[in-house]
Picture 1 (cartoon, rainbow, N blue to C red):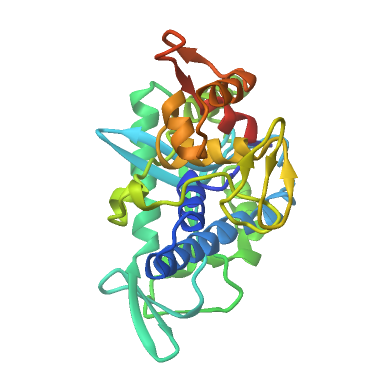
Picture 2: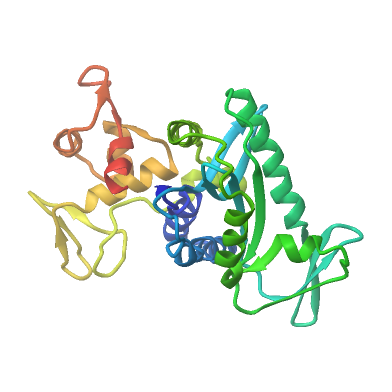
Length: 327
């Protein structure tokens, strides 16, 4: 049973919004490369759902995707966690193509593609570190000691796996997606009739993990050394995609393609919330939406029934609810 679904990372959404509101082609190219890498990783992680949906005991286990849990002044992340009464399984998904060589001597992954060799972090060590952190987290919250298994799942169909390991460490820990069900069945046999936690404890572990999940927050402007002043302001037309819509009596009208809409300002305010800040004043709304009228901006903000603080003149509106509605 899926208890926490995998959703598109907020950071990726921010990058897409930022790229849409920039004129700098060089920066946009850099953002596009980053988005492409993140999208490939996201699709790779999400692809294992096909196999998890065929689990024979899928209604009895708890599946949690994309966890980021605070622990000892830092965070640990897990792509997919499967909580069973007998054991817990950590799945680290890797969507990497090419010839992949797992160097057992130096504990690193080397990818050769198009004649270029590139090093990656050892995914086995990464998964084992997650195991250690999860064990500490369970102990900290006074949960029973539960056996934890780890698997690295290579999700790209065009990845060729090789290793110099003769101890079977790599072959037992790293698999292709198509082997996932078979390996999970092996774990079920291994821990058969060794129930460690009750259904009630399973629920408590799951609820606590979901409660402590903390999405990654990244200031995209600071990361890419971009000034907020250079982003394109205004309300974007969904017809011709220009940021030129003008506020009419009841609608937004595009002078370029004559497209009109009553709600185009909502998308612009969502952009502002994710890119700039989650709160906005009347003056800030006028500046970003390119409105000249104080009353027009006030009517728009009031019509959205946003939570707010302060008096009419100094009122600050909370745009977070717009993002929640989008989810």
